Image (cartoon, rainbow, N blue to C red; front, top):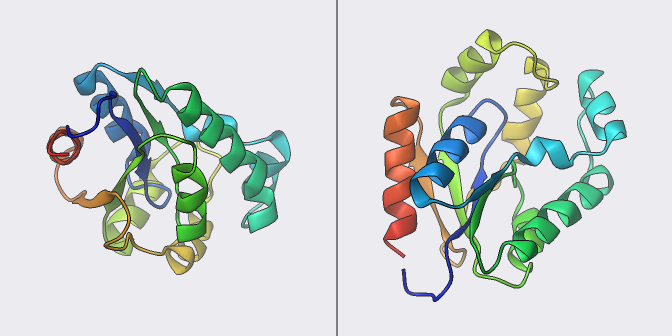
Length: 169
């Protein structure tokens, strides 16, 4: 790594792309703290999504602020946090947390991710909202610190690709 602190990584992507599983494996492999981005949602956001309604930018603002604070708090020790971070403006907010932030976009086809969501149990995000997430997704651009990681392999294979991308910094 070219910077002096431990890695600070946001594992991003649409719901069902494997952020939690890959994020936990990556944090373990890097030996840094892990945080689940969904845990930062205020209760009204969770209720809105459970009811099948998409969040708007105003709904996301306090959520992104909490995740940005977590990144700031872990700037020296490093960490991995999950966050959909679908829009460039959201990533810019997270990147402004005051430390080098690297984004890992877990990238898969709508069909693959829809199949995964259909099999998932106990999550507040209904499968019907996947379409809106893909519509909102703004892929990483060349001027953002990050990498797109394909998710068509096993979680362990995806985590290994993620680890390689982070440690190649």
